[in-house]
Amino acid sequence: MSQQTFKSASKRYWRAFVPTMIIYLIATLAGSFYLKTFETEPTWLQATVAVACTLPMVLFLFIQIRYFLETDEYNRMIQLKGFAIGAAITVSAIFLIGFLQMFHVINRVEVFWFGPAFFVAYGLSTYALGGRQCL
Amino acid sequence: MKNIIRALRSERGWSQAALADQLGVSRQSVNAIETGKYDPSLPLAFSIARLFEKSIEEIFEDETASDAKLAAE
Image (cartoon, rainbow over all chains, first blue to last red; front, side, top):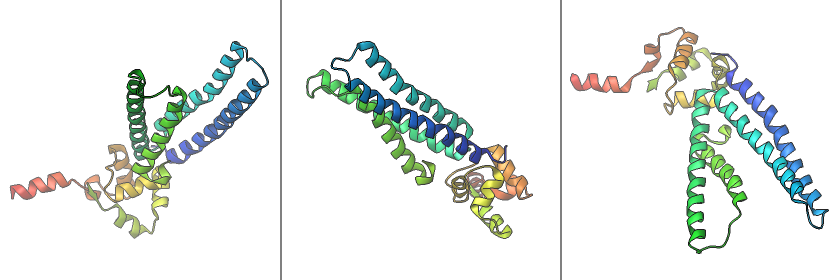
């Protein structure tokens, strides 16, 4: 076993996480600001901005998976449990809200919000399982 | 699983963070193992045993086996 497994994994995680989140913020803020300059936005431009905003999140998920694989075993267990609980809560919400929409009980809900909802559920589950230092 | 890691660590005057550094794990991992909330994997148990120059059985006590032994007696 490497002597610095946990510390080096954490360093690698933060070194990848911070720039990815900065790129995400820039892409979402600049993208939405840029689209507002058009009276009627061209579809190709809307699609390009949407892809540019999504790519950092995809990258972030892979960074997260690499962290799961590289961190120490206890932290990996907490993170994976938190991830699984977060996913279970989000998928349950998707089914419930989907059926409510299908049966016309509620109005349309933006699918986008399930993404942030997953990260909130994942974060809270991890906190509940391992405390603040496991986040 | 019960263990005597806290006692062995105290004997050497090491903090949880110092032990964690030597094992390459987080301080939370050491705390979870010491308090019995988490049972380490075999490779980690061997690393702990090597560090304290003891056998795994000297450090960890299998409570299920102890209970079975008591029941048999």
